[in-house]
Image (cartoon, rainbow, N blue to C red; front, side, top):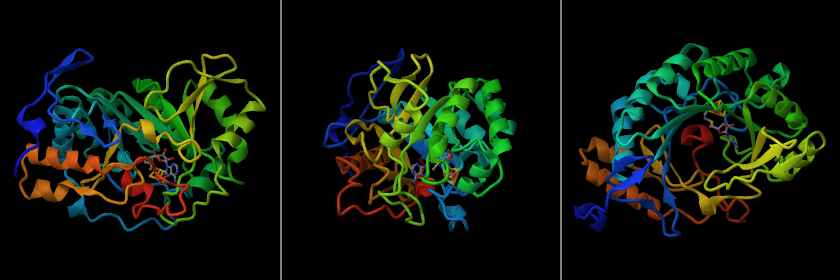
Length: 353
Ligand code: SAM
Ligand code: SF4
């Protein structure tokens, strides 16, 4: 196999955060975007059943043999970090806390050179037991998904009665120093859409950074509807009844959340308006699914199979070249508003949010 020019003649060493790194290639696409933020799904399994993500009965899980082993995951992350310019690694799922080797995977990722920033998105169930071990392994931060602090609404959204476990998981994360802790909330019409101010009041009192995420068409049941989703504008209207919101001055960069100072600050609230104000032009993300597929977009309809190549004995250079090629086809935008939009075959839980 002939290698791209960039691998045969690697560029000059770069400095990020003081660490020297030899970047052989970049994960760039034809629109000039460069992916540096890797989302790694560790499993498609989950112990909640959030209605915007999974059906009540769950899904047919990936067979064990198709899920990457701990060694395979760390090898692919190493290729991303060492050869392809990945600077941030976020573990997600499904629910990453249900993956047995999680603490070890975090420790091995944090030991890579150059050291990436390592974070996790989680529902926090079980975090009471593992928060300290994760912090000791080098996990930098967590985002916790929590859509309501009312037990009955929590149960309605997630179909499980586990709010106390989430709240104690959050406490444990705070004690372990896994902050600043961000809370991700999705609002659903007629269910928790009246609770935005209440969630914000609670988050500010607890010292968590709240971000609302517009619901996207990524549920397994294909129940999403543009007319039914709660828009960013509706979220602002609801919050502005109780709070003064002003745009935060710091530049947004590739971060998906638009940040607002609450009542003059320093507290902030974020809104991730993926549907009504897409930020695809600034996207710097790439995803690795639990079964070893590279997805260049949440809404991609094609994937690139790194697992098959890896298990067939591909070298690091060959895997890197395959990964680079997968990025080249990244589309300009997700196209949710196009009449031709097709929801991806995989639901959010199997992609890694
Ligand atoms: N289980 C973990 C959790 O819930 O944080 C990690 C995986 S979950 C798929 C990652 C994030 O995706 C969560 O914050 C969740 O709220 C969000 N999410 C799931 N389905 C979504 C949808 N249809 N639209 C918007 N966000 C969604
Ligand atoms: Fe599980 Fe996260 Fe999906 Fe909820 S959003 S069902 S916690 S994977």
